[in-house]
Structures are given as C-alpha cells and as structure tokens.
Image (cartoon, rainbow, N blue to C red; front, side, top):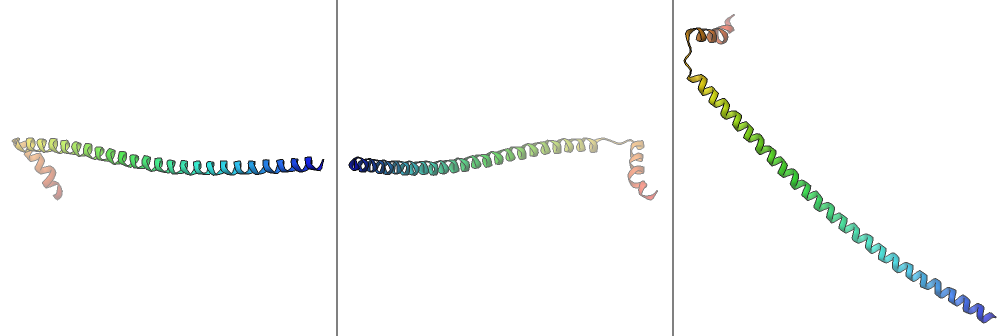
Amino acid sequence: MSTDYTETLKKIKETEEATSREILERRKQLEEDLRKLGEDSAAQIAEARQQAEFHIASEVEKARKAAQEKADKLLATTHKEAKEISARKLDKVALRKIIDKTILSEFK
C-alpha cells in the first residue's frame, strides 16, 4: 500500500513538473509574440506618421501653389485695369473732380 501511495505521489510530482515546464514554455512564447507585436506596431506607427507628414507637406505645397496662381491672376487683372485706366483721356470735368477730391481736399 505504501508503494501505491509513493507511486501516486511520484506521478503527481511528475505531472506538476511537466505542467510547470509547459506553462513556462507557453509563457516564453507569449512574451516573444507580444514583443514582436510591439515591434510591428511601432514600425507601422512610424510608417503611418511618415506617410501623414508627406501627405501634409504635399497638401501645403498644393495650397501654396493655388494661392500663388490666384495672386498672380489678380495681379495681372489689376495691372491690366490700371493700364486701361491710365490710357483713357480725361475730360475737364473728370479731371477737375480728381483734383478736387485728392489734391484740394487736403486744404479744406
């Protein structure tokens, strides 16, 4: 009877040791998987950040070019209008109004 008891205790001890080894191996594997996931997610975050910065830079450049084109068009239109106005002949009434408005208004 003591042999059965001793054998049973040995089997329990062997089972505990085998289970502990399996748990330790599984824990190591899970820690390794977690480490790899951390590295992968860090790399993906860095790549996404880089793509976002590139996208922002390209959108800023597009907006700058559009604003420059708009300013150039406005400048060209204004320049054309200024030339047209300066090329017109003024009659005496219009000239008198301009003189009264700008030059003589300072003395009033």
